[in-house]
Structures are given as structure tokens and as C-alpha cells.
Length: 215
Image (cartoon, rainbow, N blue to C red):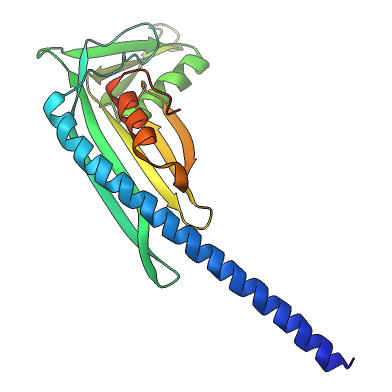
């Protein structure tokens, strides 16, 4: 067998592998787009219903001690964006966002005081997750000027969201839930073939605070 013939065989093997890979990507992309379409229709309908219902929000606290008043979930908005992938327009992400506001008017502002690094880190993370409007002040000793505590004065208002990012090559939808179960961020993912009414209903149950197997 000549060396040229060996190269031809090597090239044919690579071409076969590349063709198979393209076919796999095409099938995975189609399945991911179908899952995104199902999710799009579900969330587009869901956010309209939740804006009417305004379900109760989960219990909220920045430090685990000072608890917020009864809150409602309101102002639901849904958005979806696309991108180009291998000369094809596909879903990039789908997002559902909403506000967490006091159920009753006149809740006023809250205040949290922390003086240990782990507590400070926890409070600052929860402020970021919930996009909570706040002001930070340092409490110092009147004689030594030593730092005694950090005081956060904050609005009784936060935001929550569900961000879903599509991975067409892997055939996966990645979910990022912020403020849905409290002022924390949770991540999970589902194969595109799993995205159907049962799973999406579990997501809706999680959002409205009912027992859910979504996570």
C-alpha cells in the first residue's frame, strides 16, 4: 500500500467522523430548539397568570434573624433572546423576572447589623442576589475609631428571576434561579428531552411556593 493511499484512508476516516459529528450537532440543536419552544410557550403563558394571582413570596431575611413582612410576587416579565450558531438562529436564553414587594403598604425600611466576616459575606451575597436597594454604614467606636459593626439600611424590596441558558451542543438547558426560594441562587439543568409539561409544572409550583420536585 502506497503512502498516498494511507493518507487517503486517513482523510476518509476523518471525513466520516466529521460528518457524523455534524449530524449529531444537528440533531442536538433541533432537540434543544424544540425544548426552548416548549419552555417559551409555557413561560409566556405562566407570567401572565402570575401577574393576576400575585402569589406569596418565600420568607425573606438577610441575616436569618430579622425577617421581612409578608411579601408578594408581582410585576412578572418574560423575555427570550437568540443568537447565531453555525449559520442558524437559535435560542440563547429565556428569562422570567419579577419583583418581591410587601403585601401590605407602609412596610418602611429594614436594618441589619453585622460584625463578623461570615455574617457580612452572607448579608452582602443576599443583597446582591435580590438586588435589594440599600445603604451601607460603618459603626465605629467613638474613642478608638475602631470598626464595631457594619449597618445595612435597606428597602423592603427585592427581585427574583429564572434564567435558562441553552447548550445546543450538549442538548441541555441550564437553569439559574435567583430569589425563588429565598435570597439565594440555585443552579440545575435538564436534558432537552425532559422539558415537558410535568417538569415545567414543577417549576411553576416552585415559583408559587408549593411542594415541588423541580430541584
